[in-house]
Every structure is written in structure tokens, then in C-alpha cells.
Length: 340
Image 1 (cartoon, rainbow, N blue to C red):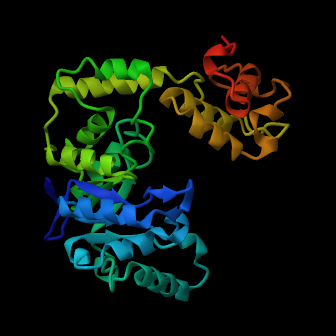
Image 2: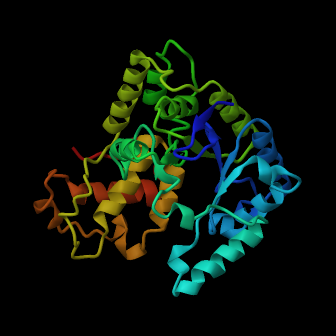
């Protein structure tokens, strides 16, 4: 395992951190963690050098913290730094902060998480969503570099964009296959992050022993500056190709809104584009189902009022039936008539 300086703390963090939001589950129920398997893979990770665990109050229906607490018995708590998130949305009064924190400490079977007061003016860490497709999303590269310049440790989450970068469509894999060094798409995404000196640790939500073993192996081979100019250029080519795979040039400007019939046009397009770009139609269909029925593409009446307002001149009324056919009815995207 490789280790890195953790901001201003006199401590080094493993390049790979364990994100405890995607622990193995039973019967497809995210709240029903397969505890024995979860503990087994957590112990493997810690035994192989992982020393940073990240969980949160709502993860796995509130059960992640409990299982992590059980996994850290028998001396394992002393081997790791532990981070969690308080449910800020549920806080209604000042005393709720202590109430929830005490509940979390009890589930995690620990007396401390972070010395919050001591670091009020000198923060120990910040956590950002960051990957090679998100250089300008949320904090982005500028935020990463700014935080590091202040001496703050940067913990990266969503290195695989929620798993979307793990199993790329054929055009993307064809690009990866041109590299001199053979790497899996997951390894490329992780090494791109570890290549940056500002990244302290990268969280990966691992569900299987195979994933843990592979990621530990990748972390052990990680180095700052390990990717050469050609390899960084290849990652840029992959990013560009992903962008080219985006079928609808919607920029989420929302000039088309509000729709007179209540359709959430940008949300429908974003869900559809994600499914096509990353070949993740299953999760995109789930995202579409979570859109209120009267706001889905199926509610479009082709009035075309939105098209007069769209700066990108998108044929919105023609795309809406396609979105519903693919995400609502399960028709293959390749068989749909694509608006020109």
C-alpha cells in the first residue's frame, strides 16, 4: 500500500480509502447488509494497509455505521481513521447535533470521530466528488488545488462516477486498448486521481472481495506523477469521446422551463444522456422511474413552446418520445428513430 500526507495532520493516509456505502447486501435489499461478508472484506482491506474508512448516517438504511462498528472490534479501530456524516437534514434544534452524534458514536462503537472544535478554524479535510469526467463539476480541479494549497487534506469520492466508468461502451474500451500499458478502466480512473499530488486518498465503495483485492493492488502500484504525457493525453481522449457519445446537447440551462405541461425537460434529458454515454440503461431506467409521472417525457404533448426558447435548438418534442421509449418502455436505443 502507498501512503500520502493527510493535510496538516501528522499522519499518512492510505492511497485507497474504503467507502462504506456499497457494502455487500442480501436479497437485493440495500438495508440488509451481508454482515459476515462485509466484515471479511473490510478486514482484508485493513490487513492490506487501508487505514481510512468513510461511512454515513443514512448509508444502507442506517446500518452501515453499525456494521462498520462491529468490523472494527478486536483492535481494528486502532488501525484506521474513521469518518462519517451527520444527517444535517434531520437537525431541527441545536441539541440534535449531540443527539445524532452520540447515536452514531454508539453504532460505530467508538468514542471519537474527529476533533471538530479543535479544527473549526483549521479544517483537517474536505471531501469532494472528483473523477476524470468531473474536472469542472462541483469543486473540480480548481477546488482540489485550492484546498490543497490551504494545507487541507482532500478525500475524493465517486472516483468511478458511481460505477459508470467501470464498464465502458465499446468506443471507450477501444481507446483504452490503444494504451502501451494494459489497465482496466477502473485502474485508469484510479491512477488518474493518484497521479495528482493534491489527492490525499480515494474512496471506493467496494461490494465484493474481488473488487477489494483489485483496488488494493492498484493502490499499491500508485504514485504521484506515475502517468506520462501520452497516458494523460489518452485520458483526455477518453473524456472527449464520452462527451461525443452524449446524444442530446442539453446544457441544463433551463431556459426551456417551466414546461406548460409540467415536464421536467432537463432532468429527463440528463437521465437519458447518462444512460447512453455510460451504457448504464438499467440505472437510467431506475432514475426515470423516480421522476414524478407527470414530469416524465411521456407527459410531453409536443406543443413545441420549449423549442423556441432552447439556445441549443434541440428538437425537444421529437426527443421526448425517444426518452420514454428507451427509459420507460425499455426499447433498445439503437432501434429508435433518432431526431436529426
